[in-house]
Amino acid sequence: MLMSKLESILKLKCPQCRKGNLFVKTGLFRYKKILLMHNNCPNCGLKYELEPGFWIGSLWTSYPIIVVIELPFLLCALIYPINILTLFLTMSLTMLLFYPLMLRLGRAIWIHIFISKNVNIKNKL
Image 1 (cartoon, rainbow, N blue to C red):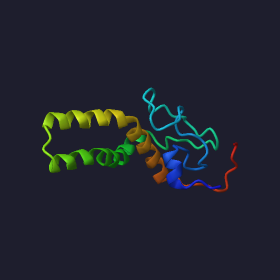
Image 2 (cartoon, rainbow, N blue to C red):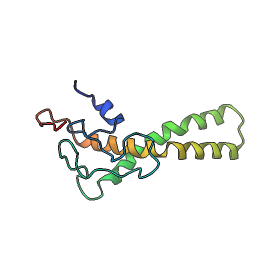
Image 3 (cartoon, rainbow, N blue to C red):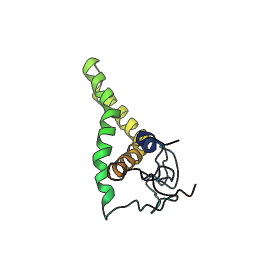
């Protein structure tokens, strides 16, 4: 069964074979060694860092994730009278909680933008 691109992003899989893991430790919520990645896909051998500084661009894909996470708090503040300190602390705590998700998904989305699935590769798994 072929894995969809969205499923591949959410499972943090290689964009080319969609079987190898992008990160050494799997899962969206890892707080230790959040960005520890394989240099190459363990399944198809794709080099993940396409050029020096490649992952800096993933900040562009992480930003909308932050907005989606924090926007409900700002909308609630517009509707209900909330103390600014309470709002700030709640938003900060939420950001700390979702920090790994934002970083990992941002990188997965970024690499999937540049590399498409190759159906002709021979998978090791």
